[in-house]
Structures are given as C-alpha cells and as structure tokens.
Amino acid sequence: MAVIHPFRALRPPAELAAQVASVPYDVVNTEEARELAAGNPLSFLHVSRPEIDLPAGTDIYSDEVYKKAADNFRELTERCPLKMEPEPSLYLYRLIMGEQEQIGLVACCAVDEYDDNTILKHEKTRPDKEDDRTRHMLSLRAQTGPVFLTYRGNQEIDTMVMEVTVIDALYDITAPDGVQHTIWHVPDPVRFVQAFREVPKLYIADGHHRAASASRARAFLKEQNADKHTGEEEYNFFLAVLFPAEQLRILPYNRIVRDLNGMSEEDFLAQVGKTFAFTEGAQASPASRGQWSMYLGGKWLGLKLKDESLLQAQDPVAALDVSILQENLLDPVLGIKDVRTDKRIDFVGGIRGTEELERLVNEGQAAVAFSLSPTTLDDLLNVSDAGSIMPPKSTWFEPKLRDALLIHNI
Image 1 (cartoon, helix red, strand yellow):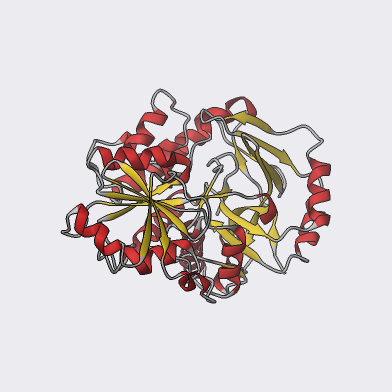
Image 2: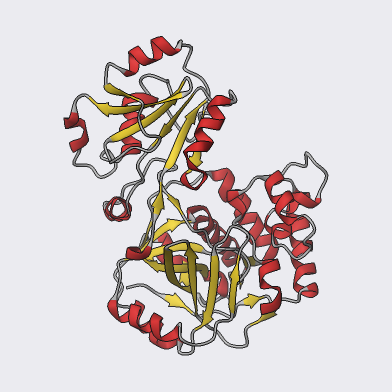
C-alpha cells in the first residue's frame, strides 16, 4: 500500500513561474548555475546553489553557504512573492520533451515508508551529499525539489489523471532547454489518496539523496520536538512526483577514464582483447544490450564479449551492461575498483550525447570513453524488487523536473 499525503504547496504566481523554476541543483556545477541565474534575481538557483552569490572559491559546504540559502529563500518568498496554497492539495505534473510525454502525481510520501523499505531503492547514497541536502532542508525548513518516484501503471489512476488534465493548468511553461512543464491542481485529492492505497510498491527512480536527506531531517526535527511529536507533522513526509513506469525513459549513463592505467594504447587494446572482440568503425552508440562502444585514439571501436555466457547472469545486477563492463574491463584492465571513490573515472549523462565523449577524449581530459546501452525500467524494477543495489550512475532520466514550482515546508 502506498501512502500519499496532500500538502499546502508554497508556489510562485503563474506569471513569474518561468523565472523562478530552475534545473535540479545536482545537474549543474557552480559555474553553470551562476551562468544560468545571471540577470535573473528570481531564479531558484540562488537558493539551491547559493554559492553563486558568494565570492569565487567559497567552500560549497561552508556555514556561510547554508546561511545564504536561507537568506535568499526568505528574500525570494517576500519579493516574488511565493504564496501558500490555502488547503492541502495534490497536483499533476506533465513533462514533454520532443516525443517523450509523462504525467506524474505531485504529493508527499511518508518518510516511514522510505525508512522501512516500502519505498524501494536501487542506489547507495554518499554521506557528503546527504550531509549537504540535509543541512539545506533544515536551513530552509523546506523541501524544494521533488524525489522522482515510479510505480507499475494502474488503469484507474490513468483515467483519473486524464480527467484532471482537461481543466485549466496552474502553470504551462517551456524552459530554455525546450522542455514543457505543465502543472494542474487536483480538484478531488481524496480519490487519488484512495487509489494509491491499491498500489503495492513505489520505487525511487531518481533522487535517492533527496529522500535520504528528508529521512535525516525528520530524525533531527523529531528529536527537537520529542515532547510534542505526533507523526503527523509535515517533516514526516517528503515531496515527490509519482510517474507510471510505462511512461518513463532512461538514457545511457556513459563513462570516461582519465588514463590507461600506465599502459600504451597498444598494450591497453591487447589486455581488452583477451575478453572482448573488437569491431573497427563502430557506431558511437551500441546497437543493443551486451555490446559497448569505446572511443580511443580518435575512433570508435565496438566491443562484444568473446564468452557470451557472461551475459546470462541470473542476478539482476550482474546482468546489467554497466556491471559487465565494470567486472570485465574497468576493474581488471584499468584498475578501477570502486567507481564511487576513484577520481580517475567520471560519468556523462546520455542527454549530452556521444559527441561529449569524443570532445573529452580529443581535448585530453580523458584517455578513453565508453558508450553504453541504457538500463531499462524493467531492470530498475527487478533490481529494486530483489532488494539489490545497482552500480553507481546506472540510470539517467530525461526530462528532468524543475525545482521550486511546488515547495513543501517542513
């Protein structure tokens, strides 16, 4: 059973929504955020990446940064102004990027269900990133970007969604990247609350650190409120958008490696060739699962395992292309044991295209790049159902939700 919780959203007026809404904090670095927010004092990047308003070189985890976030949030609330929904509500959020369209329900979910694994995960989180978002939430006393959840589709919910989308939207904006963001207020939230009680499982698709940080923030606030805690306080719930899995699309999450582990290109290819067969003049994107494309020395090579029995792993994690590449090339040949901590490897989301891989290698920022087939939604659900964890950077979801269109105060 999935518990969803209507909430009183803090949100911008329709005429300013496009100026306020921003890309998620974790898809841009400081310089990219500063450039995106330039000339726009209402951009929520001033809150989610507040270091852009501090001197260059400021430690992004310093006390000064979190204080600036709180100050900027307070100023935005007053200046915009952001207004609170009069009644607890639910919303629909539609994303359109080219031919890709998906509609999710915006609600709050129970931290208890995250903690007890009723809401299933597929990634581990990093303590430093948890620390950052927990401090950010506590500084603002708000969750400003939703966790991206998914569930196996439900015909009753699909019908209810279609009924809501015929009414006038609260927001209908097209972001600079061309993605259309449309949000509707749900007239009868009780129907959705009841319908989701029949959904057996929710899965985190994207936003593991946001969810983990909401849990840590709840633990802190519960302790501070120990004498009066009831379990119904807003800090017991986290902001989420719930999409049916059938509507979602995962792009590949590609890899670059900065050096060849002390080998020449010739020696590196000889080592790789012990396990993989090469195809000269390969396409930049592999044609199917169980194949990889490798950019080295200015050209693409196709890779395919010589022993195809290695593709038949019963374990859902071991069967992933990212796992096979790790276990048969990145670790034994390039010496990358832990992709979470090894600074020699980096990851490039599929939205940037294989041209970005070529650029990084051609400019000397990487020695070799690997283009992968995307992980599928079935992979994600199966791994989560098995209680297993995917390798880091296995999934890249597009399009991305925007921060600050709907804010949950805690």
